[in-house]
Image (cartoon, rainbow, N blue to C red):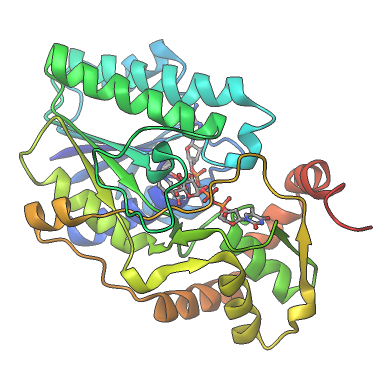
Length: 341
Ligand code: NAD
Ligand code: DAU
């Protein structure tokens, strides 16, 4: 089985590639990643050096480059994860999000169609549904009402993939997962940002009242769901992927849990100006996926957050290298005026 993982040097991609190498050792796994600020070749260097993974540094927006990677034989399975993924950055760089997430996805679809790919797993997000009502848990037919340039670009790419299935027969499924956490997550995202800043005893910029609700899923549960769909024959459908019910938690409780586990003070929390159009709640119903493949999330939040904390404690060099680079500039631009002083 010849498999391509786009975005395989990013957070979820790295975890997926590692899962495939360890649990599908007879598969030929290749990674396509442009190594933007969010991609880190170090995450998979060992696998590339050991010949377990072939790496292509290619931009999704470079059509010729993509065609070269696909060659004439292409891939049996494409897991499409490469994307611009951070909501806050999309407020400053919407065009980059549109290029990579919409145009880049379409160009990948073109290559998959031209080479008769057998499974195309398009990895999308629950954010396409926009903010959910306080008592809602979105099913796959929930209205698509994205709030940010990021989620709008993901919604557009979902529709492009589903249209390619409908009109041209692309054997695709679209997945919409909730918020992931776990090892290798870039520390601009809420959980690793708050872990690393708590470890450094730095102020924790909590948006608004902190009562926004997310459904946290351990990244390995997400990756197992993607694998279960890649090995199924269903096509042309959307599947939600959500965390365990007990992991639907307001941000402020997540922040307090991290502080408690690290033995620091809640005074580190600073309520800062809210994210514009901040979605109040995400939560999905993933019973369609469970009914089809038997998949269900296994990692409870308490266990997952403890393991994630330990990973960041054991990999300080990994995140310190990121935080001391270009990220400093983004932090200043985005949070500078939000902090009190
Ligand atoms: P990430 O930002 O950690 O990784 C994205 C990867 O894509 C990086 O390695 C980056 O170098 C690569 N990339 C970006 N632009 C590219 C381009 N033009 N060409 C080639 N490669 C490019 O993101 P993540 O959190 O791992 O998310 C992966 C996917 O899962 C995304 O599609 C995201 O929308 C989706 N998703 C993420 C979450 C989450 O909680 N993180 C939840 C649901 C869905
Ligand atoms: O729901 C799935 C989505 O989850 C994915 O599609 C996105 O790629 C991923 O980035 C994530 O989006 P969020 O916007 O939900 O994640 P983020 O980590 O940015 O924020 C999580 C929550 O924490 C959100 O309610 C905003 C809040 N937050 C975030 C940051 C970075 C803060 O309060 N302070 C912060 O500094």
